[in-house]
Image (cartoon, rainbow, N blue to C red):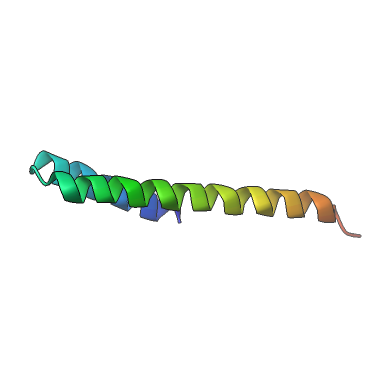
Length: 57
């Protein structure tokens, strides 16, 4: 999921350099949304992992 963030940031940078402000702005917004979704999923995964604890090994 974080690779999507990097992809959208690169698209935004290239679009901004070429003068396409609307596309650059949209790409930045999509990158922010995907980043925060990935962050929330990571935190949920961490909390669930801590709650379950370690099993019998």
